[in-house]
Length: 68
Image (cartoon, rainbow, N blue to C red; front, top):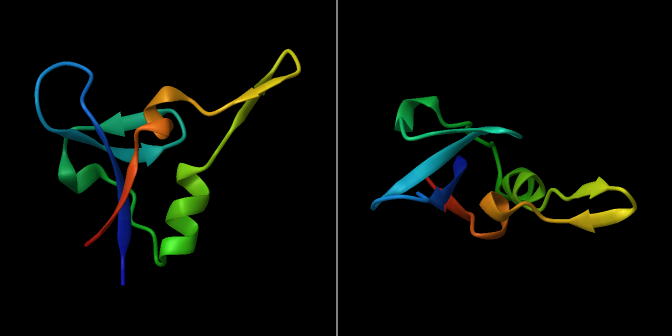
């Protein structure tokens, strides 16, 4: 079953779709489709380490894995 990742828009209503690590789109057709939930969760749970501090980016912290 395919999955994709969404997160709420910062302004206005609706969601944006995960395309790649630093790219989100409001176009459903641009979304990255994952073959299983494990791969989608791995992308959603990505962390960043900067100056010895590890954090989860805000756009991923509020993200949801959705089944197609």
